[in-house]
Image (cartoon, each protein chain N blue to C red):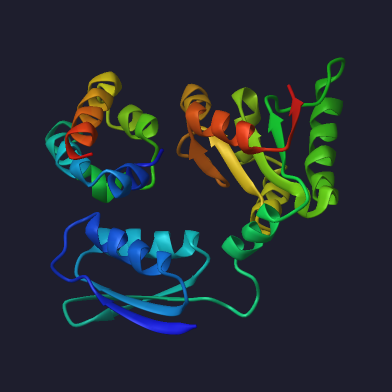
Length: 63
Length: 200
């Protein structure tokens, strides 16, 4: 799934992505909106497993 | 078909794209102008509209940009894709190599070029092409098959390119056609297809 698909289906995940902006060094939702999560994590050297867990938590809280 | 107008100035990413998506999802949009006030929003809204089958034009306006998308009379990529969805059966072709067969690599690459250029003979039943492992090289800059893949994509065939494989071959930045995707997407599309043809 792309970041756009994730954030459009689970609006609560927007804050999670913003929380990773500093670590990525860019605004993820600006620069990687059409990337898959895996692609964005690889590109910006993010911990995919942790990011996925944070997103799942945020999505579960809002659903 | 209606003409719509959306003022997204002052909104941070991804909200301009999300609002644009919401409007398009409502349907009946022939022309849409989205006002944004930052380059990232301009790029992302333009890219989204393009993917949704609109012809996109950008104009600078006071303190921002007007991104305008128009649907042409000619079927857009999205509309062509829709006709493929309605075909008698949906065929997915999975390509996990950059050459066909073993014995002679030069011949194998020529056969692959021939295979891809002949795929269109499947007509509108050809729904999706998935590129995996060395198959992703076919979608990268320098591939002799790029033209054939771009033609298929233009005709509404979905081209899915494995992101892990692009990353492995360090080709993420060289990809010229198709949508970078992950294994979940690939497996889901295989499940949705009526027939899967595998070339590995």
